[in-house]
Image (cartoon, rainbow, N blue to C red):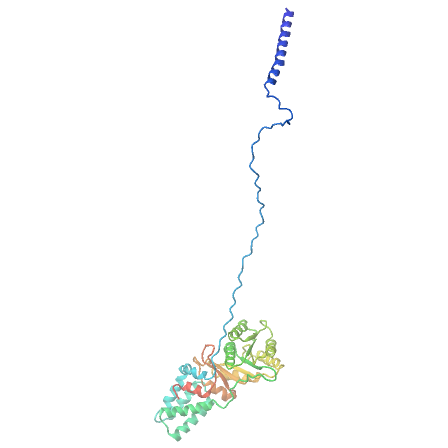
Amino acid sequence: MEYVVAAVILLVVLVVGAVGLVVPRMRRRELPPPPTSGSTTTLERPPTEELPPLIEKPVEKPVVVEPPVVEEPVVEEPVLERPAPTAGRLVRLRARLARSQNALGRGLLTVLSRDHLEEDDWEEIEDSLITADVGVEATQVIVERLRERVRVLGTRTVAEVREQLAEELTAALEPDLDRSLNTTPHDGRPSVMLVVGVNGAGKTTTCGKIGRVLIADGRSVLFGAADTFRAAAAEQLATWGERVGAETVRGPEGGDPASVAFDAVKRGIDVGVDTVLIDTAGRLQNKVGLMDELGKVKRVVEKHGPVDETLLVLDATTGQNGLEQARVFTEVVDVTGVVLTKLDGTAKGGIVIAVQRKLGIPVKLVGLGEGPDDLAPFEPAAFVEALLGGDA
């Protein structure tokens, strides 16, 4: 039995092996015929999927940010102002002066036009003149001369009395005094003018106006801002200069005023201007140290040569106190002329007579308003006409 099983297994093995030999042969016959002689065998590869052409990614260039274009501001050349001529300026401003002063004129004319003047009338005239700051001494002289003329001539018409009063007031103003400004260059250097005064008199503004007066009369001007203690003074003076094309020499705030004044004159010599106008710090006439410093400014400036003009700015509203101011300043810097400001307000015009009679210093310029050209050369006859009001 065992031999039978072994025989069966052997038979199965032989059958399976025969089948394995036959099947490969059958598959080989199904292959396509070989290529013809002389051709080259090319191995075929399965088709591959076509890829789209490579697109090169552009190289990013660094972004250059252009700086914003900053347009330079257009600097416009300042339009230079042309100050009004000074000739006849006081006459043009007469109406303004008359409005503030004609109370004096009306009062005097009313009294003098009475048919008969009693002692009380003359006292009233004296009071009017003293109230107008003419001063006691000057008032006594004027009234005495008027009394004599009325007694001798016996005139009573308003026109005649007015003429007599105008003549006496004009005579009291000493019309023969030299009121010209020394502004002509000489000895190879410009004329030098110091402007002095107390605090609050409007000195820096007046200094700027004086510069305009000189320019209006054909002079070339250079400003020296020697008021180094008031922060706005130099800037204020420079603004006045820019309006008329005048240079301003400045120094550091709180610096030495004498040094600035010296540099201003030196600069004026170098550029060849006609006049150097030096604004000094405001001072109280009773402060010895400050007044000594003002004297130093003058001495330092005089290293270039003598000071040609020293103008004292007085506020007309200060009245008789202005006389004391003028006296002290005269002792320190030898004042040659007075600039009387604020005659357009509540000022009393008689102070002009008082200053000249007491000190022998001529009033050379008067301020009649706040405008830049409201500073006029002083003319005694025109001033009296404005003081009395009306026409001559």
